[in-house]
Image 1 (tube, one colour):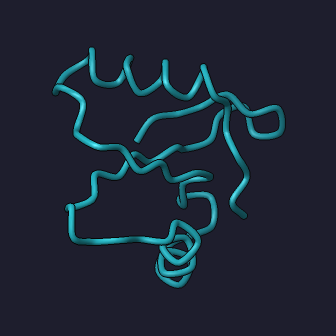
Image 2 (cartoon, helix red, strand yellow; image 1 turned 30 degrees about the vertical axis):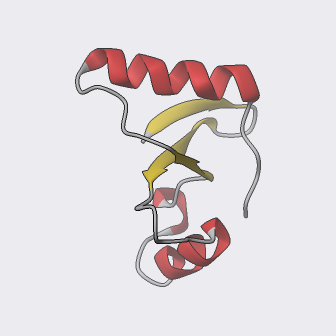
Length: 77
């Protein structure tokens, strides 16, 4: 999960999910599941499914931020 720039809040969360090959997940279902367990501000604004996990450490965070900056953030709420 990384922070992405947002005009209203300054920064919002974007979560990256690595799915098993035989599993599916609807990001809106996940947001609904989390909304019953977390405060709204703690729920990521966007969920992105990626093929594999980015390498650990600071380069991983920078790589995820670069993905967000290239494509922007979609509003799932």
